[in-house]
Length: 266
Image (cartoon, rainbow, N blue to C red; front, side):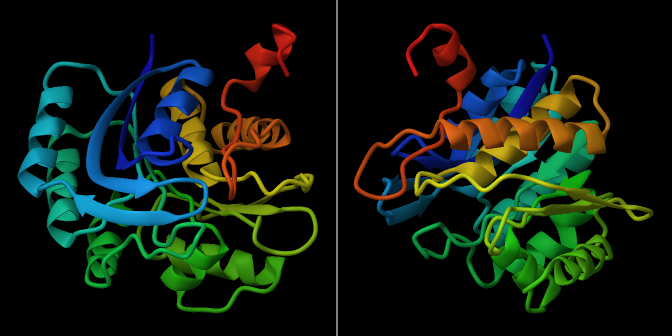
């Protein structure tokens, strides 16, 4: 059994964050573990509140997992404080997991800022250089590249600019542009365009968390980055196509849609 560790915030609504990551790990064939960086009061409508876990507790969680359990891949999501980012960086440098996926969670779908302004510099200077792949959406890529993105050409330039921050590769997700979503993967040598079909649904809560965790799961199982990204994109498209119409806002994706289809439940 291959394994993956998520370092992220908790979503009380169950559609994003730690909850989505663990579901995505399980759906994609790996045993999931977690280090919780923050607790959010959150549902499909928005984020009502955020309480950070202390850096000391984050450190204890990391040591507890990494001194006992094998970790084939790490996915990092919501890390809102510079002190927490520093602890995570130090632990990852010490334990040296093979694969690290960084999903730079900055703003929730409802517009709530999840990254403290002073934490962006720590994210850019310490965590991104450790990443095997960084997976920003359009808004996050604009923030990291300090540029406006309105086309695939802009996405490619942003991917190159973010790559220059030190990551081994960058996946800029195109879901926020109009038309069918095209993602751009840049590995320092080649640009890969991953075409997709636009799913007509408002129920897309947790898509970024789910995709980055799926990529980590495939990396943990031995795939290289391009293959892991392609498999992850196929998985998230299915999860969105069978998304759950729950709540009053943006419902969650369906992490286990394959098994529900086989059982005739969806």
